[in-house]
Length: 348
Image 1 (cartoon, helix red, strand yellow):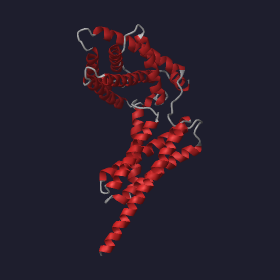
Image 2: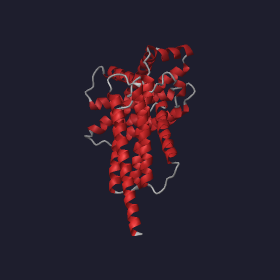
Image 3: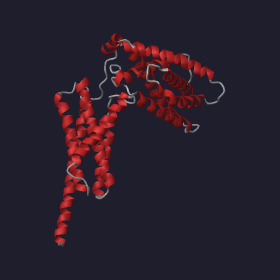
Image 4: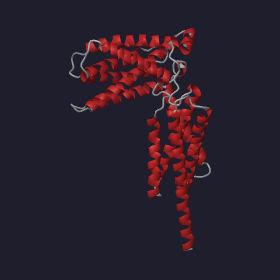
């Protein structure tokens, strides 16, 4: 009986080693396929799309084999569970895009994080075979990387490039963005001039913006006053922060306007929102914006007196939030625009 038990233990160890080997092999193939498509000089081909999709499937198959080798529970429905997790990951990405929190852009760093996480989990499983946390981490990383492979394939099929799927920037949209940014800049100047009774202008403006954010979700029927005020407060806070970080110049507002216009166009086109403003998720955008403003205030308030990195991080957060607020204002205008203008905005 002892001999039979030892044989069973040896078989289990061999099975686990084989599962780890398969997972490592499929991980390397998937990671290489993604990075190669990013680095390709010409337009990706149908063969590249097939490789991305095939690598995603192979990675999930390896994750299922790994679970079967290590887990004490599971069952024949495990592949279905992995597909459900993948669908949730892709759905979450699309929700972020449709609420203005992300675009379809992908970068090498996006691929490195789940790949590194899965490698670490596989190494840990080789050392501590019974640790379920490592098994769950390996599975989660596999699902995240598989989602990236499918998103890259989707970008290729939409825009003939793996690192994004931006829609063309029409002259009409570019003009509307410029008009919106000018209006927000004018309001921001008034807000900045009006803050004279505090030694910390940035903290004051961010505090007001956080309180104001609770009213963003109330406006979905064509009124955009709350979002206009939010954008103006963010713009004014950025200008005040830049006065702290850099030497103020006479063209400071002009520079900020140009940067904000470019960032807003990138947000709109990168998420392909200009051509489908009716699909925008207002409630999700409002909720996420409030969270982002709170994060900006906490980052700024927690900065030490000489904390340049924290101030720069606050600047990055605010610049992103401002671009998203401005994008929302443009989407309000698109929804109110006559259908002929909307078609011009989509078609250039």
